[in-house]
Structure formats: structure tokens, C-alpha cells
Image 1: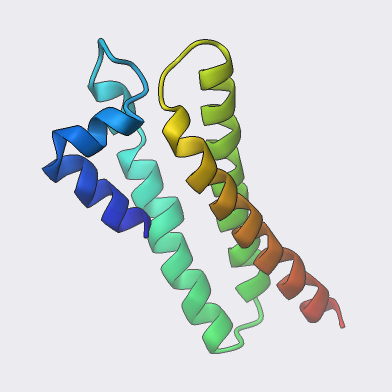
Image 2: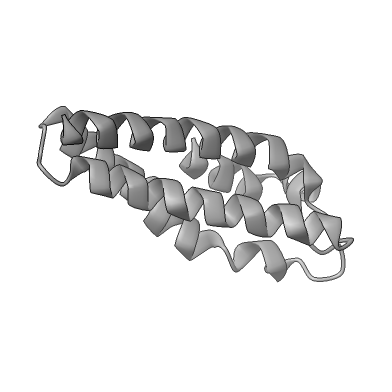
Length: 113
């Protein structure tokens, strides 16, 4: 989903406008591209593979991704509270944080059992 979101931002100025963090500086949002692609996109893919194959470190990988998503969500929340733009991204980021954290908690409990 995150990869599709970044593609939409690149191909549609209208979509990008909904999520832009700073109306005067269009590269502000772009600063998060590499981190999102590595942590959220690639990290999620690795975590999904690790879970599917029941690798011993799968729960740690999911927790790492959840932490990255939570950090980005909290950053965005504070950015908007302090008067920045980008509030449209809060709901999907909060949803991703809750879902990924839920999987991390479940997998950590299962690994401890």
C-alpha cells in the first residue's frame, strides 16, 4: 500500500497536494521517501516472508517495522499539531500503526509461548 501511495504522489499533483507537509516547500514530503521505502515497503515484505516461513526472528522484524511506522505517525501528528500541513495522512498512518503493532504484539506473544 505504501508503495502505491508513493507512486500516486509522483504521478498526481492533486494527490500530492492532499498530503504535502509544507505548501511552500514541496520537497518536505519527499524527504521521507527513502525511509518509507526501506522501512515500510521493504521491511514489511521481509517481515511477511519471515512470518510465512516461520523464521525465528519474524516477530522482531515485525516489531521493527511497527516501530518505524509508529515513529512516522507520531512525527506527522506533531507536525500537524504545530501548524504544518499533511493532516490527511494521519488516518491512514494511524491505521497502519495500529494494524502493524497488533501483528507485532500477536507474533511476540506467539513466539514467547
